[in-house]
Amino acid sequence: MNHRQKTAFGEYLAGEIKKAEMSQEEFYTAAGIKKPYFYDLLTATPPPTALQDKIAAVLDEKTGIDDNRRKRLYDLAAEGRGEIPADIAKLIRDNPAKLDMIRTTLITLLAAQR
Image: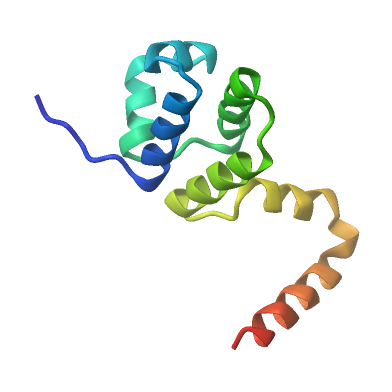
């Protein structure tokens, strides 16, 4: 049988499922996904934003709300998808009138790190 290596997102998710004392089957059933797609999430492209939210909600329901875990899931998913983390993208989408301020703040923060 061909076993694919887990991505950084997949490693983190598998670890969080284990910490939540859930079986993988219990987890993917609660998340509303099928087994083959679950294994793709562990070894290939991380899920889109809506499923990232569902994954976090399933883990939160089992172990309590954990903002750091949610941020880490978003960061690793974004890295694997080549996107902006879901929580940051939502802040930008929800504040279109502040795009210039967001842009200026980011430029200032990044310039200060050089």
